[in-house]
Image (tube, rainbow, N blue to C red):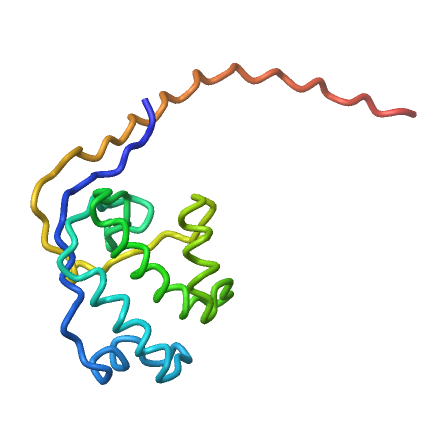
Length: 155
């Protein structure tokens, strides 16, 4: 049995924040005013979407990880991710919406990271799948130790 995260249908509550609130949240991360504007745009696109998010043991269940969304929300999700890409530390789509749309439509877009949401941005609606933690494998039986032969001293 393999590990499986908890998967939850959730509503994102990311909208309505001012630039000042966003600036305070991301304080000390070296972001510019333009970055804060793009975060605000992404948040407005994400706001209200009902998506599947997952909670993982490896980060102590501290963040909700984007798992999937309904196809009807694909356009909004695309724009939210485009605005998120504007703040990416290694931007591939900086101010290039057409290239992003082409890659999105061709299904070649890869964010290169997991998109996470803090608990205060999430309203849980329904648990789709509980976390499955496989049992630890049993310890192998102890092997008897071989007796060491005493080394002979040469004269």
